[in-house]
Length: 343
Image (tube, rainbow, N blue to C red; front, side, top):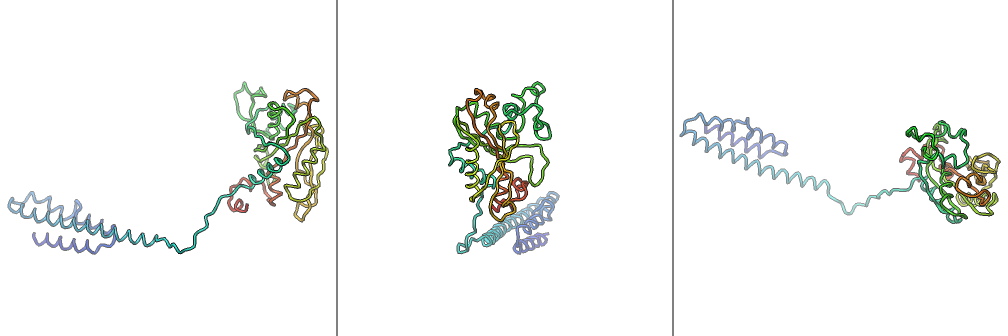
């Protein structure tokens, strides 16, 4: 029996000394110190030995167990130190290596265009204002002289928000995601005294089929100038100046008669830009505009004929597409970094 214990001691210490990793060392710990190891089983069987023999073998086996435990702890520390040194060596920082360029974020093309638009109009004395994206039927339609039976109110053009039935018939409380930022004009008219010049940029929503030029959401800005002697001539001059600064080249502008409920007379603004792009040298529809209808002034609390002004609305997305040569509006909302990193 003494020879078996000594052999266990010799074999275990030898194998522990040869271990190279913590995983192998853990296997040896279970093999020689685990609950089912020969040494543990031997210690549990000492109770059946005679007292004199039990004392002698118990002391010997416990001494061997302690030697194995001490050798195990020593080897574990040694292996961990070596593994740590190897890890440090692998992660060593080469201070002489060239630095890596930190990639910086940048602004979305719509943000770039929106800021440029605001900068141009600020230089012409306009103030930027904002309004809610969730609007009431009153400000989005009724106050803008849009008839109750106008097709724009139908589901094919407008998203309506679900509300309690008692609110469905009240235009001042019935809610919808705004279809244009022109609704902001009436809110501003109600609370401010003319004369003034404002632009109202923001996101709008339309219940439209999505294609390369249409989406259910896009960005728009509305422009409003009110005074006693504001005319279509002022409108044309400001529009020409804006396009010249925005596209950084001479731009021809013409008005084509059309109809909008909130302007009278109403015009469609078309532009022709020189150059050699696919949109150059041909008339492109860019905005709806006109002299603000007196019914809109009336809805905002003004006496008929007291003030006059012009309003026009442009799509920021379309301006961005023309400026940067983008051929699909959906790219602006895709979140695709391959596209966005170009700006």
